[in-house]
Image 1 (cartoon, rainbow over the protein chains, first blue to last red):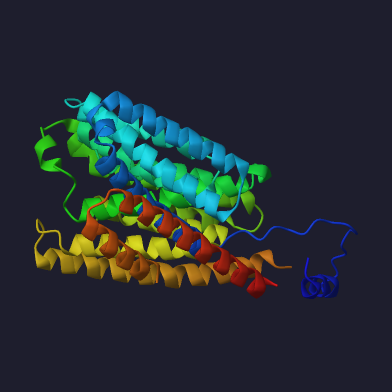
Image 2: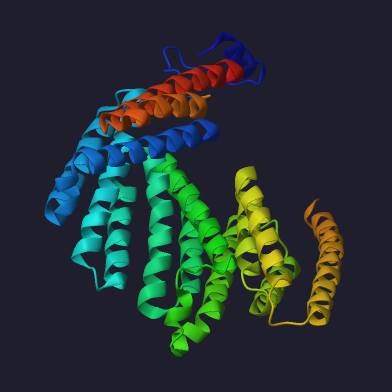
Length: 354
Length: 49
């Protein structure tokens, strides 16, 4: 531990036990982002090398699957060894190239069963997210699993919007329980980051209107028709779970009136989401970021909110007048909520304080 | 810088059309990425101290 930190701790009245091991400094998010970027780039080059130099591997799905699994197993062994940054990079690239080879083999084997392919890829990514001994790899696998779930639901049930709600629900559950298992806290956080990035990617795919041949699957199923509302209902469930968790944690500090107001606000957000899909997901992520004091999650939530608002604005099925009226009502309601909550919070604090 | 150096190496090797060039590119990206990570980690450690 550095001298300056020891002095600061001494000044703060924290005594250190002699011989205590120095705490490890975790790599910041931008280092992980750089690792992921170079890992992906190297994986693409490796795959290009395999594609150009070892064509026979790609021609046989069995050979591609075997080579892919061997590369993933090799990456697992390298990551378990904890051999430093270069080895971690090499393992990440090998694993990504191996996953692409396995996906290639699965695509050949399940050529007429697209839904089966995406479910198989989801299983593979969930497995990798749970077992791979690297935080970056876990986050990337969680992101890939989110996208695979989106595609699997789209292809099999024509219910892609449910994926966003499910991913959000799992992410909220993870972030609320990150301190439950202290030994696995970093792994939970990596999975949580990956899932929230996956949610952003899913929403961007939904909003861009390129839901990957979604129009072909609009076959009139009730589930397909209900899917957007089911996604928002799952997001509301996540919001209620978050509120319940917070009120349990701060049972004495939050008066009953404030709790009722919060639950009422959750219902209002749900009602607004029936018209502007994706709004509830953004509100949940922002509330989660505030609840756990995570600025990156708050920023992600703001980005989701902007995307949802922009998507609603460009929704062509509603007239500009209706859009303007709804946005006006939303703005007035939110301002009124802010004013009301500020008054109630202050009054509530005055009652609680002795 | 990583992208620029990779593009320069790629331009040289891709002219020859040799698949081994892609392997060299992958190794170059891994090496430069690892060096950048080591540097950034050291910087972060100094700033956190």
